[in-house]
Length: 350
Ligand code: ADP
Ligand code: MG
Image (tube, rainbow, N blue to C red; front, top):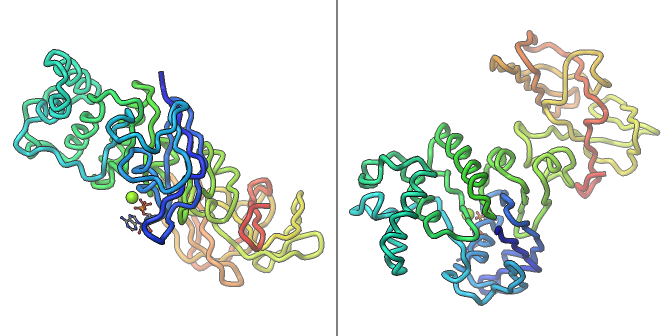
């Protein structure tokens, strides 16, 4: 039976300085939730309050209907995996996995079966007799996750667990953790500053900035309907282009070009267009702007064009496949008007 978590007006202050400003959030049973946001936005603090490693300054933390603010960490049924996983260097993998259970006086047979099961899930059975120094970074991180699994927690929390791994291993472990979630079905919260990790792993992404939630929702909901400039710029890679927009009669003046859009444009101050939604080929939507080609990257599967509008705004374009685009030329950029995002002067989507 998976567990639900409710945050009600959760506040955190260190002395006089408030860093989490009244967070409301519902996490459904079995959901894989990702907290994402720039460094210092409060991801770890929020996770540590849920884990019971950090006192909650205000509001209610409710797990399965029970207020948990004052319940000690060990009694919350939560296991946490950190970025830096301190394994005991003198113990082998089996002993590292068993250690917490031995301390808790779990019967020997029970320890054996739990360690065996965790090792099978993580595919580290052949490594059980090795010492940590005989393991790769990815294998060590697996052992760290194994230590969480053997505790059979109701909730798993991960705080940037892959940040110390190299790029290839990160992708591999990302898939492993997603599989782990599928196999176990537990409620999990995963913290990262990497929006690609968030997009690929999450059932629900919570975008944080400066101690508040900017937007929470399914990955594609955030990609398709970002509520504001911050979320629009944070979710999606490469980043969404932002161009200054000025109302002009019924249309919108952008980079010297007047766009007529099949929607209301009142109050628009910024036009957002994702690089992958812009093309250089006529017949694909409306003309967005004339752009000068500054740089072309031929990636094989895609062609990335770095360009500049007539009024000197940068604009990046990702074309599918291998395309011949002439450096220094000025070309027309097109977009399907349904793909255009508009924001008012406050940065709120309209
Ligand atoms: P993130 O994990 O998103 O990078 P943190 O949760 O670690 O961010 O930090 C959020 C904010 O709280 C930051 O401004 C940080 O400086 C502050 N902070 C974190 N821990 C402490 C502490 N022990 N004392 C004072 N301020 C802290
Ligand atoms: Mg952190």
